[in-house]
Image (cartoon, rainbow, N blue to C red):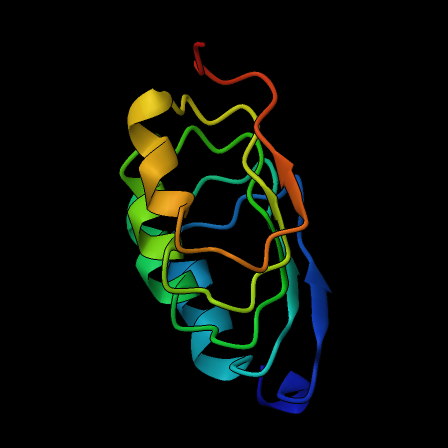
Amino acid sequence: MQSFRGLKSLILGENKISDTGIRIITDYLTSINKLQLNTNTFTANALANIANLKELKVLDIRNNNLGDESLKHLSTLSLLQELSVSKNGITDKGLPYLCTLTNLSYLDFTTNLITD
């Protein structure tokens, strides 16, 4: 991973990236601004590591069954502009965690448990 320290975009969708893999990615790719991790095997705990990526502008974590509490970790990503969290079992309880993300211009909540 040290060879890729300058990487700005990483797409690892539909793999078997675990919490350990997320920690390794976030330890080495600290200046990344686009991260696509849809359909993997990490848990909501891994988002605490993703929250350390302060330059992150685009995050795709679709289809990982992360739940409401996972969004709490993302609330510190102040530069985030695009967020895809579809198919994660998110309910209305998770929505307040996103209120601090004032730079969001794209938000995908499809196939969750949001009500009116």
